[in-house]
Image 1: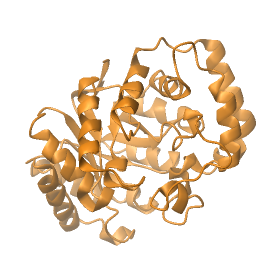
Image 2 (image 1 turned 120 degrees about the vertical axis):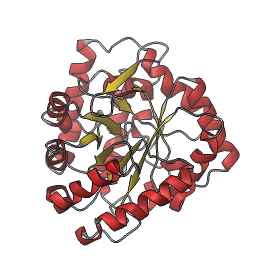
Image 3 (image 1 turned 90 degrees about the horizontal axis):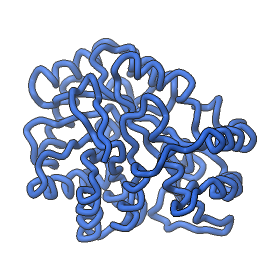
Image 4 (image 1 turned 180 degrees about the vertical axis):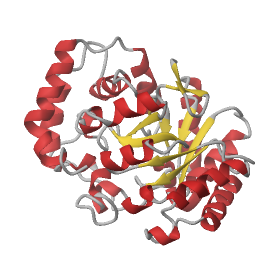
Length: 325
């Protein structure tokens, strides 16, 4: 699989990674044997980057990955911290950072975390010098090799990119969330900051498998956070109204080329956006992992398809999301 260099980290990562939120059971229960099968299929497909967080299953995702790493050293693991505590800027201190990263190091079974990302902290955190001084200290102490941020908004991303120590920005980017193309991706490319594209399928909408009457389990955030009840609504269906998303996804499915499924076209669209380092779709089984990884082998989408995707966004999606994030 193609690998891309993240300049400020100095390492190459697979252009398709694996998001592991689902391994923490926030998308419905996943047995550990099934989680390991997902990880095995990812490695077999050329995936070298795994993205997790200390809050996914309260550490379960990190722990499963940690056990997997013992037999598969050399993978790049990006984790996140900050959402196990109250979302208060006062919580973002060096002492807490040490405690949080020490817990993740224990969960993952590593001395040094490859990458730790602030996990969608309150907006004022991005403007506090002492926060980034503390992150620099984590690097100096060897707890982490590099740090980045996971953001909700483009403005947060731009603030973080301006910090000289920020190695990466994780941001929602997909055919239904195109605003980062305007300023964030160009700024990151100029600064040598990696872009990790998350929620690439708009919580599954862009797979084209959902209907207006589709229901999700009670432990699935697509049920309990549909209107932002638990966290930022933009994390669920990219903030798009479900019925609108179903209709738009039906149109998007028509862009699939012979031999490809809509989800692969959605991933291919992200892969070919200038400035993207990796895209991190989740997967609940090995078949989904392999299909996602295969998107890296597709030919670039032609200009006519790119134009059609832009028109679909402008016509159906932009009014709902563009000015919110």
